[in-house]
Every structure is written in structure tokens, then in C-alpha cells.
Length: 184
Image 1 (tube, rainbow, N blue to C red):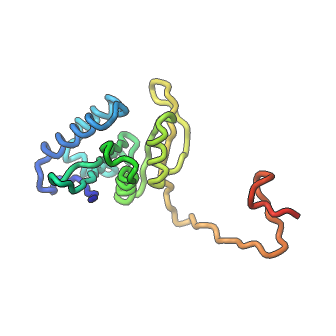
Image 2: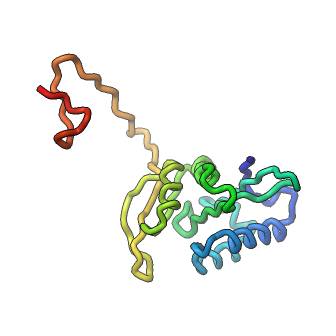
Image 3: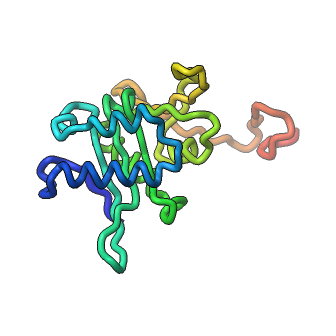
């Protein structure tokens, strides 16, 4: 499998790439892609891909009959306006969606996605890609969504140093009966 960014310089005319991606999303989006997301993808232009926070990646797999599209990921405005991942049903569960989102994170350095609480596979994909739940929000129709975001890395932020208990230290856990609780 190969993941690559779709750019103007890709050598293939934009109309062909865009048409293949739109057909793929319509066919394999499993009815989960909203009409507004389809409209945003339809309106996507090559100049949009040059804007900060906008990115389009495809995952391709080599098959017996040639190269085949296995998945796509598209973001606009760092995911605030558009964040969509679609993977072909034959290749789901193999980490392709998470790798596509990780490619977005690598390129954009920050990412935000809104996922319905009822869409468990999509939530799992976002967590596997390294996104964190940051808020519960409502879409215009009133549906509850989980806002998933990358954690910005600031110069002040440092990982806490490891602390190892010594023999005789009391181990405190948040819940009684936890398997790590050392009886006294």
C-alpha cells in the first residue's frame, strides 16, 4: 500500500483524479457521508489544495489488475470545515484509515474532526490515528458529535518524568479493588 498526497503536480489531470475520488466516496461512503460533505468535495479545486490546512491523500494498493484506490482522506481548514476518510470495504480493518489520518497530521501538524457518537468504527479510527476527544458538540440538526483533535505541542509542554515507587511506598489508585492496588 502506498499513501500519497494529491497535488497539481501529480502528473494526472485534476479532473480525472477528482472524478475518481468523488466516485469512490459516493460508492464506498456507505451512506454515512452527508450531502454537505459531498458538496464540499465536489467544489474542491486544485487551488484549494494550496491553502493552509487543506490536504487530500489517497491510499493505493497494487492488485492483479493494476493499481487500485483503497482509501481517501480530505481535510479543509485543518478539519474544521471538512474532515472525511473513506476506505474500500475490502480493505477496512487494516489500519488504512488511521494511516491516512496520520498522514494528514504529519502534513498539517494539527487536525480536528467531528464524529457522531453512534459511529463507533469512525471513532476508533480517529483514536488509532492519535486524535483525542476534546468536546461534545451539536451539529445544526441537533445531533451530538464528539470533537476529536490533535494535541498541539507547545515549547512549554513536556512529558512528565517517570516516577518509580520504592519498596514500602503506598500505591494510590483511583478506585478500590484495582488490580494494581497493593494491599497494606
